[in-house]
Length: 303
Image 1 (cartoon, helix red, strand yellow):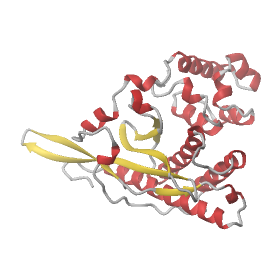
Image 2: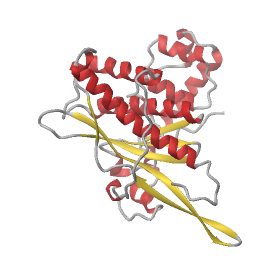
Image 3: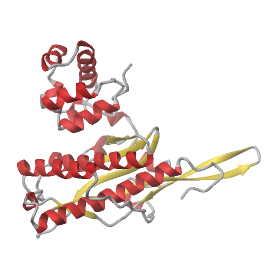
Image 4: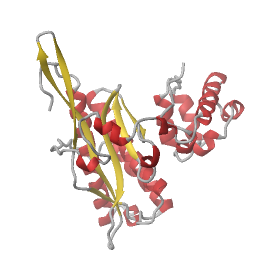
């Protein structure tokens, strides 16, 4: 039995690197083991290669018949989905309307002060994140104002996946991430929104922005939002759940993607690592807070 891939299509998958593809496959109910995923890594199968593979190709790469058939079927499902399949879902305006906000922009979401988690620079997920980004930076160079959005999204995706792993280790819960979750039409063009979920609960929405500066180009992860639920007792017979959405900050959290950071003895490397740690700490803090909120008793106000 396969998990629905409705939030994805071949347009998105072909731009994925190896680890992003593997993280996606882990979220599907394919029951692939570490050996299967290891073969994909060894053969350097990224999203673009993946979509062109058949069952025989997977078997030739070293996979057994079962996993090869599952992956071939997954590819068929992705290709059969219409481009940008999330067009059939709600607009951002409709999503915000669910929380009493009459707007089509995240800028009108009320603010709250996020609790950050101090991520140690010795954390294995952080170390992997840094190496992953530096590996890309070696090929892409510095991130500049006119850099392709697909390049920026690779950096953003790497950081967000890292935050999910760190938070998951802390709270012993599994988080998932969907790009452009329930965003349709013209709103699905331009910057990519990422929705983070735990089970069926929407945790937060974040997007990347380029800071327009003559001195430097940087990635701005902002508008990190979360849903906080306040439960109130309406009458003696039952209760009513009132949901409110809040935004973590209207100010940018900046990471400088400067190629000089490839030199680990440089000031640019130190600045780069501090920026990644700061952003990770904020995202992990949000995930921890929301995961704990889901465990609160119904009669208690959350957040």
